[in-house]
Image (cartoon, rainbow, N blue to C red; front, side, top):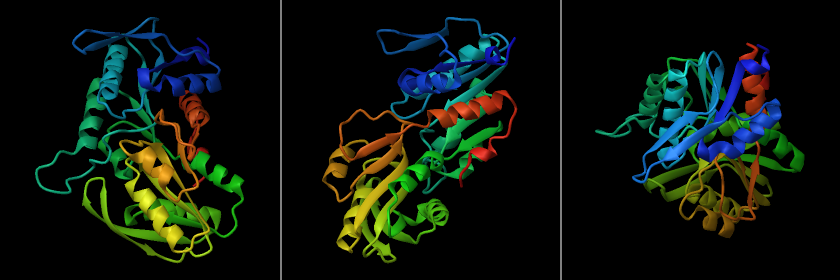
Length: 312
């Protein structure tokens, strides 16, 4: 068995667009699997080729709705029962990750629950990108390869050749990520201090730092309803910023997000394609992470280090 024959890549329904690009980069065909849906909404997954003794990579982001997570769990279970040698879940966007701790009494820790579900289903390794909180890696008892979208976003920002560049974080919690970008690009950092009225609703926001005459890039891990990032952009523009852009790893963009971005002071907002974006918005740009995941899969198969893939 050649090295290329020793592994197979399969895709969940909603992440096929990315899995096809990963396989194209790897120079291998996408594995043949079928999902059958029943009239009551239940579905079943089956592999249409032998996977016995192979390393099986299952590409599926677990963004809402929960069918995407359930489909991945069924794919893992089917692979285990079909005698796959190793089952590696490739989850570009790890959903439910915002529930990573008990921030008030009597709440679930969704990220830990999902980690347990994946482990019990039978994964041997996880490959993911920009978890909402780094400590989620510790929820797993299998190896976790945690990639960073900075590998594709930073080269794009450098290609813009912006003068008077300034990196901003939309909240204090994202300051570590923003500081890493600022150090790599050799530019100043500003922070936004926000308070929330409730989930997805920003009550107030203040800028910590000077943005006057600067080309500002706001850095975050995900954009959901876009309330925070558009409010930050509007405040910075009002404070004298020359231009305001944003970049985030995951394009959740739910509810009023597209309209908010379109009507905001943002010149553009850059995401990876870890989540499909179907709305139309001239300001949204998606960068492909297919080559980055393909190279990681190749290195895992060949037992090579992946640390050289990290820019920062």
